[in-house]
Length: 177
Image (cartoon, rainbow, N blue to C red; front, side):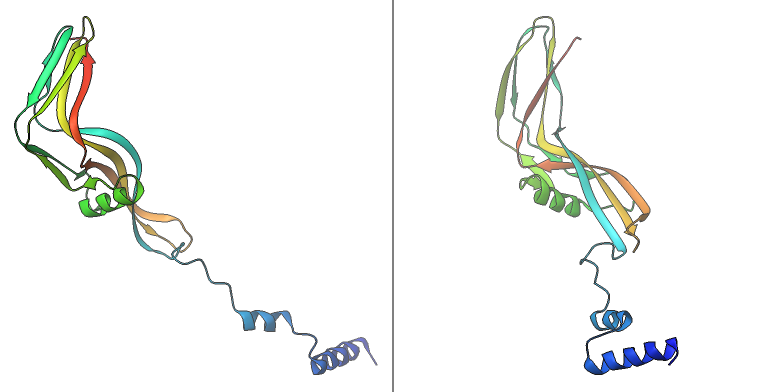
């Protein structure tokens, strides 16, 4: 018996006993392992990231000094709005929704105020005190891109977003003039 007929005879005997399954048959039975759901599946994606706290001022900036005390009573109604820069980007409602999920349940499209609010602050000697009313919100970056099945991004656009928050009040800073 030559070498090739011995291999065929052994393979036939093993198959009859059911103890050997060829690697290609095993792969066909199990199939390829599916990719994790939603990962690198391709398609349009939007994202908001890089949050940092900021004050979104509205209305006049009040200035007093040098030195002493600044006392401001805000008696006008006003509002601060979430804003998105750039074109073909994300909507305000998407940006606010992402912010609510990631950093603050108080994120909102717009916050309005109408009641009096008084603010008092001592000003450092030789400096000018400045204050402005507004929303304590967040700056962030938005992006919209097409995700390729290879996980790389294509057709990416991005811009800035200022997200208003339900927390409102005065922001204070000092200047030399």
